[in-house]
Length: 122
Image 1: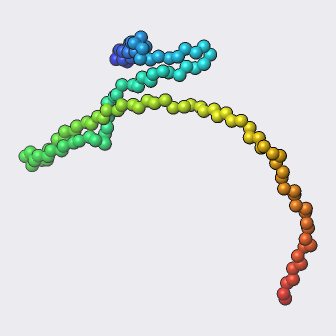
Image 2: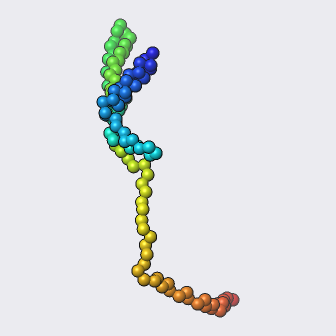
Image 3: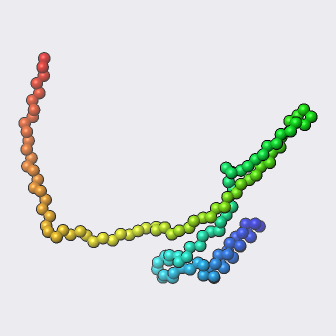
């Protein structure tokens, strides 16, 4: 039941935001529109176990030890940051044309040297 109520609440908030003009989209017939406004989700409380506190109290009751603990759970407010990020970027450039003909160096002729003879000392 709780899930249905939360779903209906979120749908009502989205509908009222769309009617209020908080969420505007450009209308393009064949293109995927870019949103004009970015609606960030609401801040939420997130459980933070690393910041928990605990108090342990010990007493001696009639020869036995009795322990009690009190724990404090910590929560942190998480505000999401929403900003547009480019998905794909297209770069257009003109071909580079040299103003004069490019002359490449002539290839060197292949010169074969005689094989080096090896002498072994005995």
